[in-house]
Length: 196
Image (tube, rainbow, N blue to C red):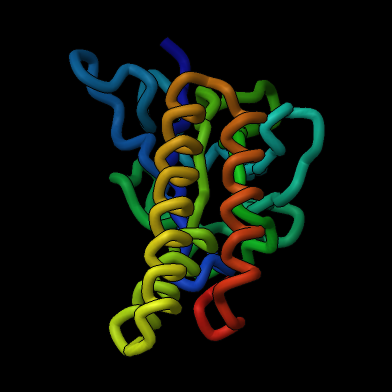
């Protein structure tokens, strides 16, 4: 089996930064035939390696994160045959909540090795907004306002659960619609300090 790059991604707490973990790991014949090292290439043979984020339709490249580029002397690999490591931590993420498709592409100058597609649902902004409204509820003494906050919290939670369920079922357009609806609710009941 040839090299099969692997990765994981997650957003920072403020939703504007991303962490990318390189998970390819070392080649072993019984458990990781797609890993780094003989009979596959190691990182010293890599000419260019990038993580690319697409929209949920996979038609638009939204972000690109280089891990290695010989032309610029960038090399984030810690060794020739690395174990999993954090390749990128705190890089800018400028996309809204939604469904994103990630690929990790490694080029050794002769052929490309591409990861399996990683589908990710980011709902960080909506989650932060929800927590912001809940924190307002803790300090609210007006029963009418408290009841309205509770109603909005319930609606946002249902939309979040719905978005996660739609994502799990592969209905990415519905997941993004539900997230957008949740953010509209947040805009009406949350000031910017809530994380919206």
